Image (cartoon, rainbow, N blue to C red; front, top):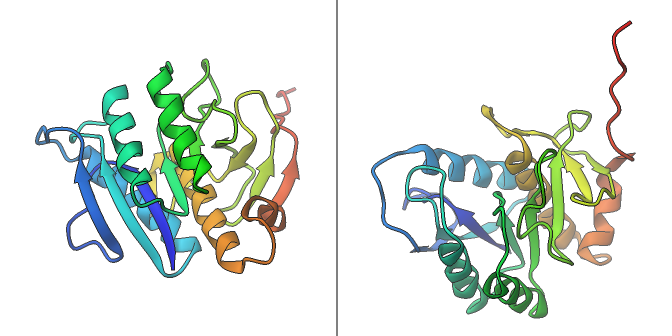
Length: 212
């Protein structure tokens, strides 16, 4: 059984595999966040079986949150650390509190996956040392990764969520990476990150040819 912490919107209470749910914001009546959380969970579970989800709700309905909510969510997950924590979002700035909350989970063995948009500045927690940072890479099929080793993103992954063509970009890529990482943990023949090598098809950034 793989334990995954999903810091996102609220999954429905009857979601298969939902082990626990805690809110760190007040609902605002919108439903965008639930759709996003479902897409992230579906994408993870498309790669790995027997997934238990610990849902830390930081999106109230709209896809917006605060550093305080994210820090509180990370602290809650650290009380019963999951194998993997998916942060399919990026904060524009960091704080000491956020850095400490991420470090606390890393120290107890949780792998943190963070989305890193291809454009713009650093996104947190993806920019922290040891976080598995990922951006969308159109070359990648759902079961494939690219090893980019860019300043802002170590990995690239499929930019479309499983079964949801309307949810694209770095968040979808992060969910694919989290799912493949869960598969690697289940294989348990080597370290989880080293195990990602079997899914790596491309090396270096995607290069698009200019039209003639």
